Length: 460
Image (cartoon, rainbow, N blue to C red):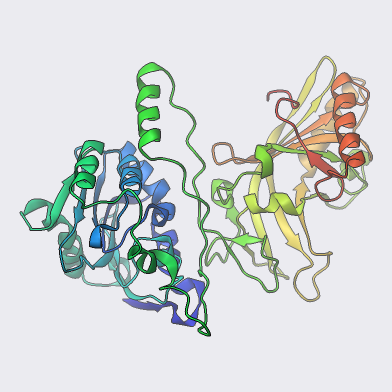
């Protein structure tokens, strides 16, 4: 058993930090009851709820609508994420006159039979899970030797609402039930003034009193309300389901010494990897990557120089990444991915096998070499392979000053993609013109890069 208390303003004491740690792929059952609820509090649950819905696994959720303050759209979002209606998912809304439904418990069961739970003060809202407010609670886990019977009681505390008739309880199976609760005044279309303090307004501004900031910030929730549910239903019946929206993962700054745009997985003491190394944010403007101008550092492998080749990662792109800490001689923020590399010629495309790479931040801690920059490693093996293929086909090797395409990883395909272009080919000239136009219009993204327009890079 462990006590957490966000009064010391440590992010590891926030409910959201615990949720990030336990909502893993081994969770097979999920339960909660929360007195106050808003859909923004679901941000750390999205991946788990989506998976449990796809496997028709147990999800039982109770939310309060105290003074009728819970909004219709928030409940519709929850319905969509839970995949209602389905046989192993149950949703209930509890509302009274003159009293509050006020518990805050969150319970998981894993595929090995172990259980864990939070029991405390944090509501299922962004302010609650992110600890904008001062919250406290107990964490219990059978893996830590805590009582199985106590964890069973916490689970039954939710389950019993769905098996016994209780006043104030409304079962929600579909969007039609939500409309009925709006008509009955149990849910609201817009938040009433009384809900502001409870749902994250901090209780209202009071002159001269200190203000708090959230300890953990999350990327926006994917749009999954009633409209999305209808869209999904239509797509299922008439064609392929559209790609899922990026999952928003908890990502927090650790400044100082790091700038606020360098975001970390809460509590991470090792590098993040693959999809877990992405925050869920997108590149600005919806771009998929950069046109980069190679320099003496990034092109060193094609000159057969020694050392490590890197591409500098511009600040506006760093928000997409979610770092852990690499515990080397000098600990540094690090996110690990694979990288694919190719050479696009006029009549031929040459490919190297994917290999591991990483993005690290340098020069932010005292004595660390670097100038406060973030770098993507260009691994030597695929670069040497590309060089051999280029030379065997009598083509020109990439060189300092050439332009190349660097495409960003996504949660569906968490891989960097580097396209080297045959010099003076039509594609090379088009890319060079786009880069030089960006230079002329003062639209470079950092030093030596501009945004890569959609459709310019050939399909992989």
